[in-house]
Image (cartoon, rainbow, N blue to C red):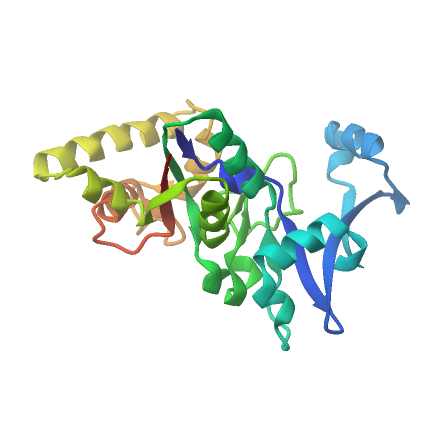
Length: 263
C-alpha cells in the first residue's frame, strides 16, 4: 500500500482552550450577513458571483458536548487535556485511526507506506497554528478561508497518532522518519548520474506546469522562477528540485515523513 499525502486529506478538528476548558472550533458561513445552511453554502460557493462574498466565522463549543471526540481525545491526547497552561490550537484527525484499522482488516500480509508532511506529538503540542495548517500555493501566505474550495489545504500529520493507531489495529511499525528513510532501507544509492536524471525529469514536470499543462500548473507557476534574482520571493526550479533530492538522500532536513507499517 502506498498512501502518498492521504492522511492529511482526512477531516481535522481544531481544538483550543477557552478559559482553561477544552473546546472545539466550528465554522459558520454567512452571505450578506445572513446565515447559510449547508445547501445554501454549496450553491453560493458554486457561483463566481457570490462565492467571494461569503464570510466565515469561527465559534467554539465545549469538547464535552461532542462525546465521541471527547473519548478520542482521552484515548490519544491525554497530555493535551491534562495541560495546565494554554497552548496553540491543536488539529486532530480521528479518521486516521479509522483508516489504519480499516486497511488492516483488508489484509493478512501487507507492507504499507504512509507518506506525508508532519511530525511527532511534541511538534503538534508546541508549534503555532500557522506551522500546522496551510492553504494555497507554497509561500503564498493564504489563509484557510481566503479561497476555500479552490485553494489546496494541507495539515501536518500527527505521526505519533498514526503509529499508535497502527499498532492498535494490528500493524507492526517497521520504520518512521524522513522520506530518505525509504532510500536508506531499500539500499538505493544515488550517484551523480542518477541525481542528474532525477533533476531532468522533475524539471520537465515544472516546465510543463509553467507551460500550462498538468493539474498543479496554477500553483507551480506562482511558486517558482527561472532566476531568484528576478523574484526573491520565489525559488528557482533547479534549486527546488535539488533540495528535493537532498531531502530524499537525508542530506537536508525534511518535513515530508514516511511511516512504514507491516502485517
